[in-house]
Amino acid sequence: MHCRSQSSRRSRGPRGRRGPNPRMLPFASCLPGSLLLWALLLLLLGAASPQDSEEPDSYTECTDGYEWDPDSQHCRDVNECLTIPEACKGEMKCINHYGGYLCLPRSAAVINDLHGEGPPPPVPPVQHPNPCPPGYEPDEQESCVDVDECAQALHDCRPSQQCHNLPGSYQCTCPDGYRKIGPECVDIDECRYRYCQHRCVNLPGSFRCQCEPGFQLGPNNRSCVDVNECDMGAPCEQRCFNSYGTFLCRCHQGYELHRDGFSCSDIDECSYSSYLCQYRCVNEPGRFSCHCPQGYQLLATRLCQDIDECESGAHQCSEAQTCVNFYGGYRCVDTNRCVEPYVQVSDNRCLCPASNPLCREQPSSIVHRYMTITSERSVPADVFQIQATSVYPGAYNAFQIRAGNSQGDFYIRQINNVSAMLVLARPVTGPREYVLDLEMVTMNSLMSYRASSVLRLTVFVGAYTF
Ligand SMILES: *[C@@H]1O[C@H](CO)[C@@H](O)[C@H](O)[C@H]1NC(C)=O
Ligand SMILES: *[C@@H]1O[C@H](CO)[C@@H](O)[C@H](O)[C@H]1NC(C)=O
Image (cartoon, rainbow, N blue to C red; front, top):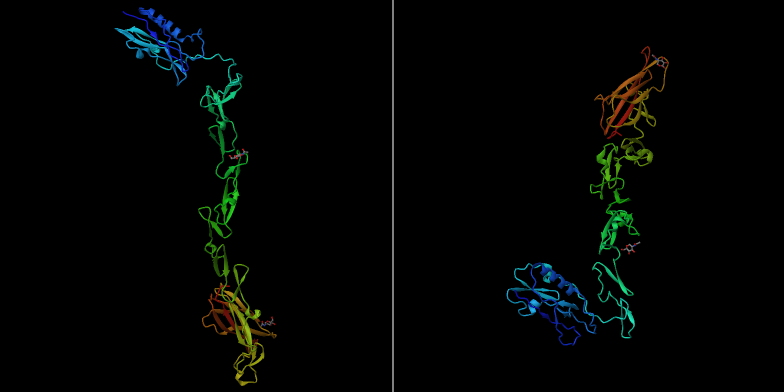
């Protein structure tokens, strides 16, 4: 076994101009077994010992086995195993360590930590004696000024921290919205503490409140206020009602809301019911109206009422004519309707003078009357009552339909010996016109006297049921 001591070179600091000053490494021995470990331990203690304090000078210098590294401004271990040719001889292997090296038998177990791998412990450079208190340094006028550790990157604040320079020192603080947990600044989840009315979104260093749809953030950025969608262009076609958090579309009367909830479509009221109008229903945008046939006018909203043209003056009858109104129209009839041998005795009465032989077999008088009925009347229907105008003691009156009833649409019902009722026997549909001769035969109880008079009744049947 061969061991030898090896002097290491001494490195100069960047400002040093000294010549080499070699020193012996305080280790040079060949030790067996466990003694070797002892030696390692001692060596480490020696290597970690501070700079030689006997030699303060104005230069930054490194102890034996280290050299100045201008990049890191630190003393750096020299790997003598690489820099010294044949650092160990023969069967020995070279083991570098801080501040020196070892030659060990190849079979020797080596503890990894001693290898010199991993970051070297910082070795403080030799400093000028600083006349200032810690955190201060002399300026050109030899007075002490604060060192800005933050600006000069002399702080050890974490990247997550903010450096604040203080007189003589500095402080590592967390930004707003961050909290120190262990060595690091961690974002505070404000959503766990702050009040948002609806929703909270945590952000790095802050938070934000959000509102549900239909709401917007209030002036305090936390509460949510209802949005009046109706003022913000809600897509209602007709009417818009704002409500809490939303809005509703409604339609004007006569319209119904479409399935989409926004648009309105006209309701066809006429299709709902045939009873809306008596005659004809006309749908219009948003409403409906009832129409009546010619000769009628609307009564209220749905009923049709016959216009009495004779009353309203809308007729075209001449002076010699009489206006006769009926359902849906009117008729102008000659005021004098008496035909020979009858003579007119009043507006609608014609008389056959008894002195005229032609009158012997004729009814002694013909009275003209007019009436109107609607179509489709339910039957039997009393339509006209006949009354004897003159009543003689002991006389008896019989009534019959003398003419105009060939189809048997009417019959007479005798009420008593002076009056009878004309009855409609079958439903009739207009427009249609009947001229019925209703005869009244007057007799005395001895049948020695017989007189006949006729009521010529014109029945206008209107085209409609109203
Ligand atoms: C609310 O937020 C806006 C925009 O972020 C800001 O300008 C305003 O000052 C905030 N208001 C309050 C009361 O915090
Ligand atoms: C007919 O009626 C009148 C009046 O009611 C009456 O005076 C007369 O006696 C009646 N004649 C007969 C035959 O019943």
